[in-house]
Length: 304
Image 1 (cartoon, rainbow, N blue to C red):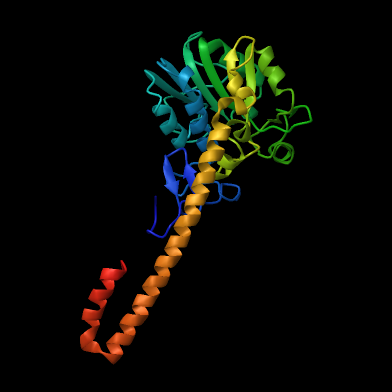
Image 2 (cartoon, rainbow, N blue to C red):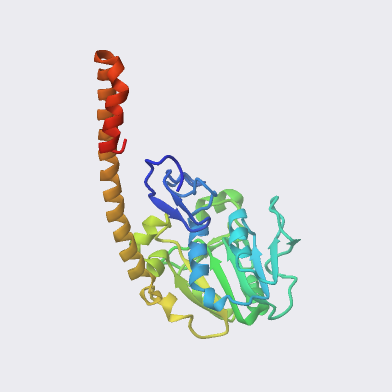
């Protein structure tokens, strides 16, 4: 817990494992309650931490973990997996600290060599995203998992135009270096590349109460992807099957009650302190010599 003894935790950062009583800070686009005041993690990092925890039975004894365009916070999360080999890659368009420069459409990795690949908010930058998806399919091992995140709009098809000007990209895709905004056909694109996928959202995985407690984005979508055809673990497909929703709801309900009791006790303590200070001031004025003795007797009755 951070802050003074009067601070009450109002959130938990799953990225750094800290109870947070200070306010979460605005995100890069100004959205409220986005950045952890301790580690700087955003909602996607905290959700990634929870998702890795749920997937932990499938992430044991990892040989190679690859992250495309890593962040400082995500590197820490993947380091905890204790894989024998961790590789970070990026195309080199910024000063990102990586192990090697490489394009997602030409990964310098052997076929079937990667047990976990994390690729957040990269595919929308790649002109030939189908080639990138085929590369992900190629490098995943038979047991391999890829965690993908892209900007998506539901109810429409993907809108893309790699030849658009930066101004047009900003208007249509929300950012000058994006070449598309994905739609409902994203899953079929993955399937065409030989990847079976399931969508996972924070409410489906941990429940609405935990979404607020962990400061997550309810509408965030992560694709849990496996090579070949088929379905992912049922505990992710529907959310409730993970068992986390009911557990978090119960724990957070008890926590809310405990916080209420704690707040009332602190109010009572503050009133007692105020009464003590008032009595001390009056004694100092009216009976200076008797002040110390009276206060000593009071302390035996009330813990001040």
